[in-house]
Length: 307
Image (cartoon, rainbow, N blue to C red; front, side, top):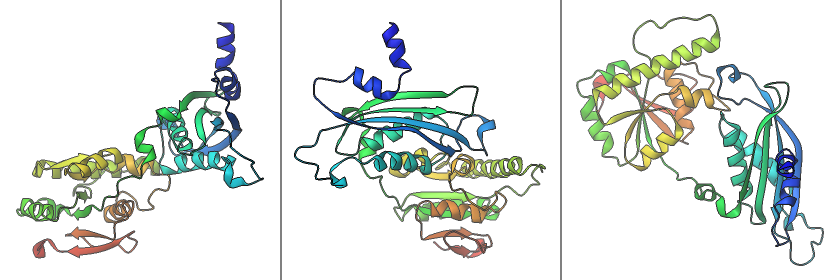
């Protein structure tokens, strides 16, 4: 028991050695790799960065034949640090467990990697280090990590408040469905005065929530429209032919490189969202086009909509 407790708090390299199989494997390690990043599920952890520390050991298949001092023949340390940087840059995450899983999966995509130990710790959340440690082997890597993500080209349409309440709304949706492309609607806030807060982060939340309230108004106008807030929901919906109405709070607040547009600038915010799909254009019905859009916008007055 004492040995098990000691190993539980030892460096991953000691755990790797203690649990090694009979087949000989080489090991590479990255120790005390510290990065500053915004992470955490608590409200106090939003809008600030904190240090997290990675200790990683990768068991690799021994090379056959001479190395010849050729970096292309080995699993470089850079691959480990790149896996960390890639997953932290992909989106803002709440859980260290998620970070550890994704980093482990990405490392195990390397052909030489057989097993990986990942320890991730927060250094600024208390008097000591708070963290998790996982072990993953090649046979446990998630299938989705080994495949390129499906590439969707959804039709993105921004609806003004006049368009949402237009009598021809269902007919427009009928016509948009005929394109055969996944359909995502974006909206702005309802035409009511939103509460005003002195703190910009609080106001940002209020403005985003005002958009989400209006998203539910649109969903109530046509049962085919479903309000979605996560990229996972959007991916599922696009695969399954479900029409989406974007609720922006989570994606905007979790974005590593978030939009400069404020929630009150709803069309510019929607164009940023369209750009995350690599969209070339977004149709805007019944609203003025902003100057600072992230994609090309095609504006059509409500009275002239012919799809």
